[in-house]
Image (spheres, rainbow, N blue to C red):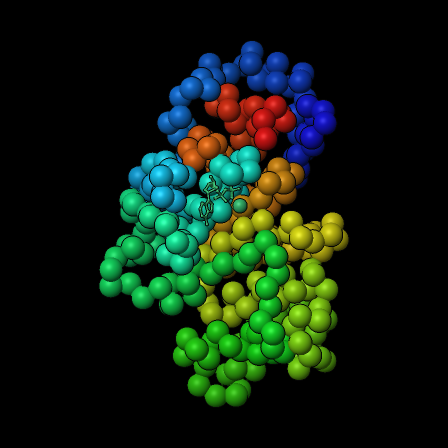
Length: 298
Ligand SMILES: Nc1ncnc2c1ncn2[C@@H]1O[C@H](COP(=O)(O)OP(=O)(O)O)[C@@H](O)[C@H]1O
Ligand SMILES: [Mg+2]
């Protein structure tokens, strides 16, 4: 951002965070938490979480990439994770479905529960876990298969379908949920890789949904998309929260403000602040959050 101005739309309300409104913030709130204090402030816990993370630390060799992070992920919410590049957003979301298991040198400590189940329990099978907690990546990555098979593959290997009729049904419902059915129903046998970028990303979201996840993790899902495709994916995220819990990493603050109900701000591996998105973007508790949202850092 080149100026201190940030237009934010949260639900029906609009805010204009400017230098002036920051003066307003200063005069009207309690003293802000100091930059040196790295304990999490705000509302990181909820009463009936879908996922519970406690004292999570991640190390890549000697690099302590996530430092003692505790946060709940609420049911049917979109939780945005924001913060400067390299602060640990991707590392943290990869902990939520044990994707870090595949990264060399990576060590995770602490506790992460999905409902009441410890996902790091040594008896957990990560294959069904990664269906329950699905992931959508920055760059759309359809399989080199037909549109139909991109969706049908997961339900088949996870044993969710027994026959052709059930498979066809899950393909159709998943593509419908992703808002893609009408665009592709006449060319299901064409390769997924031949679609536009925005369609490919919605195909990947449909593929994640086809295996009946509880949580969908999205790591900068729109950063490779143009503004129109981005808007389509954002609308989709908005609809999906009725059925799923969504965690979205984004470096785009306007996007966080548009799609999420809660926002978590990370800074150099520390979780600095969590709260209602509207509050984080208009009246954060921590100086570091304020620096970031007003464009002074990152
Ligand atoms: N696969 C990896 N191997 C080693 N270090 C990594 C790896 N991925 C991330 N890191 C390190 O962990 C820290 C956090 O990175 P990352 O989670 O990618 O941040 P963000 O997604 O917020 O940009 C950085 O210091 C980065 O260099
Ligand atoms: Mg990242």
